[in-house]
Image (cartoon, rainbow, N blue to C red; front, side, top):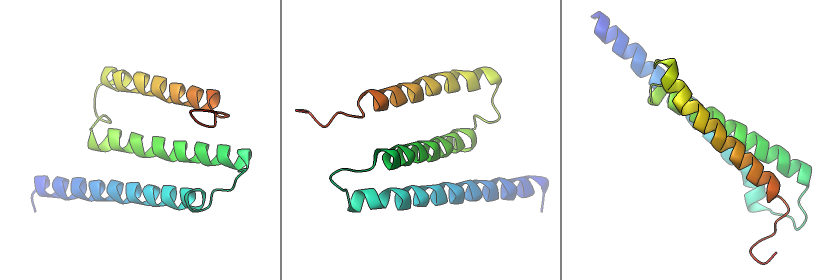
Length: 111
């Protein structure tokens, strides 16, 4: 086996491992959110909802960062390109968190 074949095998193995980790995180997200999808009580516990939202946000950030680092090859890029991606990403995440906080008590269109 030549060095390029060994490097390709290691690269392929790494991508399969990352894909497996992403699949496991997705399965955890589905299992965690299933009880709220199947059974939704009239007055859900706000603390449990907050914990669920924070957990799902953390898992989503983990998945997104893995995709960006490994499949979009940002991990090996120059720092300026990393900054050009991370700064708007942090801005978007902070806006989502602010909107979730602002509209947490909103019931619907008429509420």
